[in-house]
Image (cartoon, helix red, strand yellow):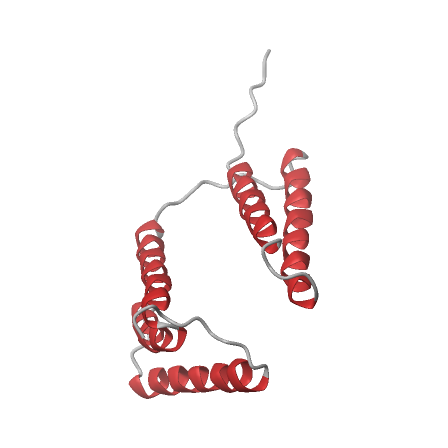
Length: 147
């Protein structure tokens, strides 16, 4: 009697992790050699190692293939569109303006209704990023093509 093994859909997520890690790894070589390249390289290599461990566990049958539920797919897709718009806004208006617009919209989308909290989080986040990266580390944040 032939026992047909069911396809484990976790293999798809493992493949996506491999693809993303390899794409980022290739992109790391566009970064100037030296200290700035070390962290992204370490993250990519760690992702590849963890994806390999994950693949081995899947192949050994240690990762169960639970029923796939697409119940949150619409909301995830909407959030993905929101993030894509944020990336486009960074390209057009720069990091700080795009972030000041994106964060409250994302917080509201995710269910936050307290305007005092929204404004304090957004303003504190922007100020901390500006002071830490802009002033302390003297890093230039992405500037938009419009400003």
